[in-house]
Every structure is written in C-alpha cells, then in structure tokens.
Length: 471
Image (tube, rainbow, N blue to C red; front, side, top):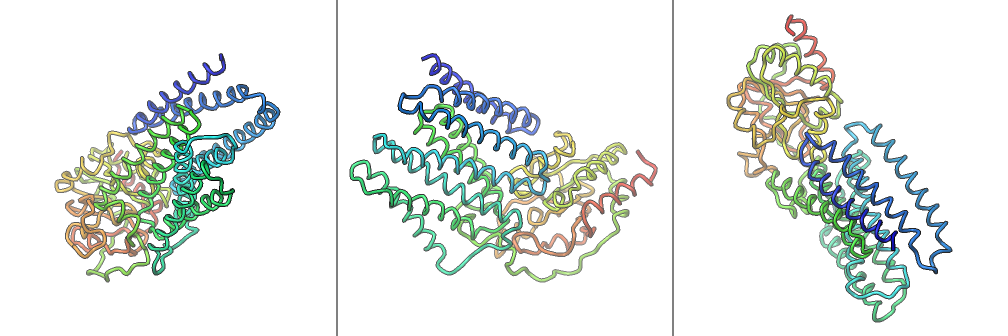
C-alpha cells in the first residue's frame, strides 16, 4: 500500500512538472529551464516505475529480477546514446535527431500496446479499442518519423511517388483499421494471433507510405504532426496502463503538437491535407527560368554598406545552419551594434527544417532574445529599413507567393524583405529553394547577391568592418 501511494504521488508530481516544463518551453527565454524541469518530471516517472516493479503479484515475482535487469539495461543504453548524440549533434543534423527521437516515443507507445495485447488477462472491448488505437498511432509515428529522418539526413534524396499512390495508401490504412477491429473482436470470438500481427505490420507500413511522397519543404510540419501523434499514442497507452503521468504528459504533448502543426500549416497558408497529399516541396519540380540578371557584390562592399546603415534586418535560413555560421554572424552583428546600427533578426515560422530551428540556431550563438522577432511583429518594419540581409533563405522571402497565383507557394505569408531599401542575399549559387520555384527577389534592382558559403562570406564581412576602424 505504501509503494502504491508513493507511485501515485510520483505520477502526480511528474505530470505537474511536465505541464510546467512544456509551458516554459513556449518562450526562448525560459526554454532551457523548461527542458530541465520536464527532465525532473521524467526522473520521477522512472523512479515510480522501478518502485512499481516491487509491487507485483505472486505470479509475476519469479520474473522480477529479469525485469529489473532489462529495465536498468534499457535505461543505461538509452541515456548513454541520447546523451552522447545530444552533445555531439551538429545544428544541421538537429532536425533529423528530433525526428528520430520523436519516432522512438511513438515506437515505445506501440510496444506498450503490443505487450498489453500479448497478455492473457481478460479485458473489455473499450480497453482493447483504446490499446489498438494507441498502437496504430504509435506505429505510424515510428515509421513515419524514420522516413522523415532519412529525408532530412539526405539518405532519401527525392520524394517517392507513383501512379495510384493515394489509393494504395488509403487501402493500406483501411486494411490496418480492419485488422485492428478484428484484434478487438477477439475479446468475444478468438481468431488466433494472425490478425493482431498483421495489424502491426499494416500500421507500420502505412507510416512509411504516408511519408514517402512528402517533399523536404514540408518536413517541419511533418515533424510537428508526428510529435502530436506520439503524444496522443502515449496518452492513450497511459490510459490503458492506468498511469496518470503518461496520460497527462501524452495529452499535453499531443495537444501542443497539434496546435503547432495547425499554426505552421497556417503560416504556409495551406491545409494539413494539402501538406500531406500534394506534391509541394518536390525539389525536382520544374522551376521558372531566369527573370533577368542577378547582380553580385564582394562581401567587403556589402559589409561596408551595412556598417554605415541606420537599420539592418537579418533573415536567417537553412543555409546558415549548413555553413555553421551562426557564431560568425553574431560576431558581425555585435560590431554593427557597437557602431550604432540598429540590428534585428526576423524569423519565419517554417524557416529551417524543424519548428523553431532558427531560434535554436541563434540561441546557440548567444543572440539576445530581444533582438529576435517573429514574422508578424517585424514585417511592417521592412519598408523603412535600410538593409535586409538574407542568409541561406529562399522560399520564405519569395514575393511570388504574394503575386503569382500559378505558383505552388502562392498565398504563403512571407517576410517582406523585398520592401527594404537594399537587400543583400548570401547564397551558395543561383539554385532554387525547396519548393523548386525561382525567387524574383534575386533579380530586383534593390537586391544584390553575395555568392559563397555563409561562413566564408561572413568572415570576410567581419574583417571588412574591422578594417574600417570602428568598434
């Protein structure tokens, strides 16, 4: 009885820490403390789990030692691997790490469901239905996240598409539902293990089929969606296991992931069904031809212009992460600020390859939070800004989204960099963005390209402003 009391109290404390931690993660200022707080909540859950191992039935006691060994082994291996990856991962690889970690959460929920379905204890149809539903969502999150990881990591270069793909995917999903229903029906009419086993195979297959055709430009939304799936699956399995901490944590994560998914889809002015079932984001799609001539300038000249400007807005994109140039960028910014230039950062909701990618990148470099602005808060400032500096971004500053109804990105809100008096774009070459659409901004009279790797270009800019004798 004492152990049950401690376990129940630990779950309640953990749930509170999870909720507080997630709330703190909503702001860059408190995000780190939020992660630490949620980590303490996880410690409470793990402690309660180990305590619960001693609160077993007489029939289960012979297996107690084996369960303890397996639990400790899993904990040691998981902490060691996750800790090592968390410390060594490059910012360019952060999105795929988030995807694979999220997939492990979905897989864990599916494993909990599998254990429950393998047990011989009698249960109700409602209990079985929730177990199967959690297994379905968890399996989809697992294999879908693995495919998302492969795409983000460059192991899958192109979306996989074929004729009749949507019908095939719908068929796989329908088969998974039917097999799930048959698994639930075994409560009344035993039909052997085959429907259950085939159900898991179909659910895992659908996660793969669902993600294969989605292009790289939509990966931030997909990661967010699978995060919501994982939370929902964990919450459902928490109900099955009568574990309040899992229920609360899963539902909070699921609802937060769902809200973030909706907000990101809205930021692209597209529905979730369009994200999942359209061909948007295919980098192999045909792009429009050149719309004039791109004008380029030496990094030193661009830096000099910004040094003598009154205001500069910087728009970071995935190219900044690829070049690992965030530290050099902030070094350049500190020099400008010391010389009296008003510098701000503008963040598009879907910039990068995962939700909040650019915020994390800038935070790693030490950029103060009060210099970072969301799109809605800064867009009106571009018209009165002397210089807009775009680093490795493309689609999020493409004015074609506002003017060309035939464009696949038409209607997507953008950062209004094109309105600035002068625009400098640091870019490796003349290629298009993930949407496969050419950016007319690069051909405007007020836009000048600075070709090269962002790290190398910014290093030259730093040298140039230092040579001017300022701060």
